[in-house]
Length: 358
Image (cartoon, rainbow, N blue to C red; front, side):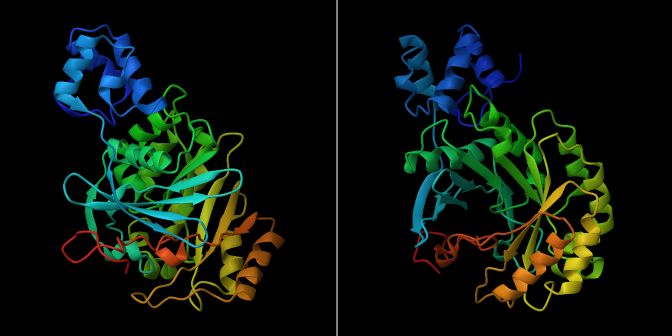
């Protein structure tokens, strides 16, 4: 039998781990399956409310374990309906999650790390620096806490994108452990088609992801059209060059319904020229892919600015003329520092306690 958690939070444990836990307490294995469905499908927080378990087993669970979501320390509501959630973790660290409602669905932008080590020059999360990976429970807790706060029913149209703080492929084991529970019909029931992992291009981990039986969709943060330009914006390109990244993308085993997504943040006067657009089209020729153009979400700490709309439209048209599906994504929550690339724990004082929005 696998090692079993002796005490503490059950959030983040998979079905097998919960079955092992039940057996360790002298219960049949199927009791672990009941715990699993209760935690993730029924979203029960109080262990004493698991009325399908015996009173004795519930008493043991309550004495040694709990189900605890990350604490919502602050909520910042945008004029456009988005909400940025600032979570307090048990060790005093903080993370951010963004809720974006639409008419027929909702999207959660999830974090996979506290901070980020990759130092992309235009990203505000880089200002936080690298702190630590999140656990599977902390990843799942973001989804459970926000869906509870927003009263979102299980089975509703929910999209999950790992595009918050951190590089998901640098925390791949915990991200995949969370995804397995998220996508399980007996767990949280979010279809894999509605879960996306975004990466700057950690090539060995892209190859690892390709071999996973339970894998979400993949998005690549491109943001440049040539090697020197990308290395200046994204230092990771020196380790995993653009040419090798595109080769890994061409080898990636797409499912029949699947496209690769390439995200391209447009920076005025930096990567937004017609020549850039033509080079991007050349890079992606022959790939089953689509491009999301994201006008930059600026702030006072970094020097970049978004291009004017006519430049964005011209860039899009060049790609479309070359038969590359290209969409303009206007980020939600810009007024609350919740837009793409803006997550930087704004709203914390220097001592790390909740304070006023930056």
